[in-house]
Image (cartoon, rainbow, N blue to C red; front, top):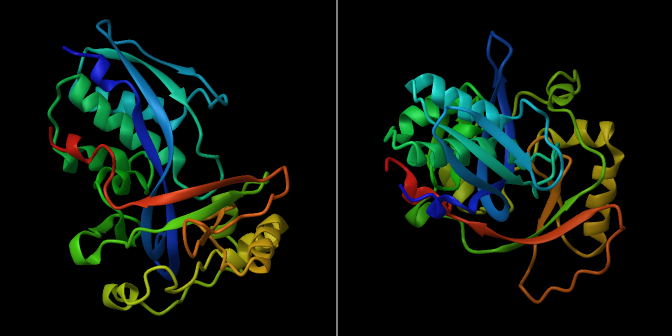
Length: 286
């Protein structure tokens, strides 16, 4: 079994080009509509096979919690299959936490795809998605292989392919030092929960300008730095919008030559391109 082919496994971030809350279920879960767009800001996971069943993690960058989604994904896959193999995982964490960019969920998805291959389990992606959903609502999206139109509580995923795919574009993504707690936003009495349902056709007519992020007003009240980033972008003539539950903000750049001035030193600023296909899509069902 070749291990070298599994080194340098990417886990890309996502941006929500819009995020609408269209209702709430009796169990309290919010019903959403959103377009999830993959971008080329990635974590990297390195895998080494262990024959004794042990699972361990080594952080090559920022320290992650002991029971983070990477370890939970590996254990969940091992438990589901009864696999007696293990692994050592080195993590190069680049996607910021509490940003609304799905970094933890993407890491979990890439872990499931990599270990499905490394352990020769040959589970279909539908089964991996069922396991992933127990880890987090966004994990199945990162397993679907494409940017996507997402509905429900995140479980209804329509890949954006062919004529529905995002046009190639470049964005600036800015993460202020402050993070945001997703639970605090969704539990806020000020959260707007009754946006009218949208259609994929309506979204397709204006992919990067469609709708809004219903979480953004609450997030700005909780974290003024979000407003500061949006204002900074507005001063440059760019339309900033928060992704997910924040606190990262992004804006479409008019072209690759757009000159960004120096931003406040505490902000993490990165120019990113979008990805219509996940880098590990070829591993689905293999």
